[in-house]
Length: 147
Image 1 (cartoon, rainbow, N blue to C red):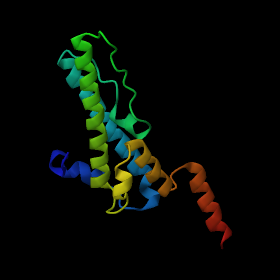
Image 2 (cartoon, helix red, strand yellow; image 1 turned 180 degrees about the vertical axis):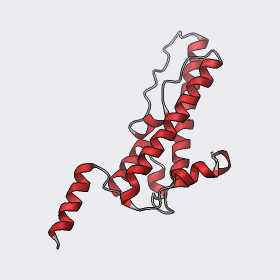
Image 3 (cartoon, rainbow, N blue to C red; image 1 turned 90 degrees about the horizontal axis):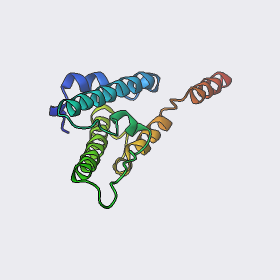
Image 4 (cartoon, rainbow, N blue to C red; image 1 turned 90 degrees about the vertical axis):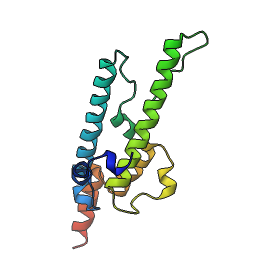
């Protein structure tokens, strides 16, 4: 998905400029955006009289989707549903990676890391920003101890 598919205002609102103190806000805005994408996809699929997607955009931050492959003798409908779910999961991974490219500072995530699944990229981003409460507390305590 190119930047033209995402409005400039969405990209601007989601952008993280590297200030680690603002990462929690970026994280919440990103998750809200991904949830909205998931909800819109569910509506689209239900309106088309298809089953709801198994994977959600925001779940990509936590793990790869678990898709149950239809067994031998599965109906054509089940095979098509599975193929559609694989396509959705791939699109979700691509969309989130594109969001990272558009909303994170240049060079924040290197090319090698971008080849990995989204949840591994996200874990590396979180680790690099010390975004967990205990890490933040530890950072504060270290800073206070140096005075």
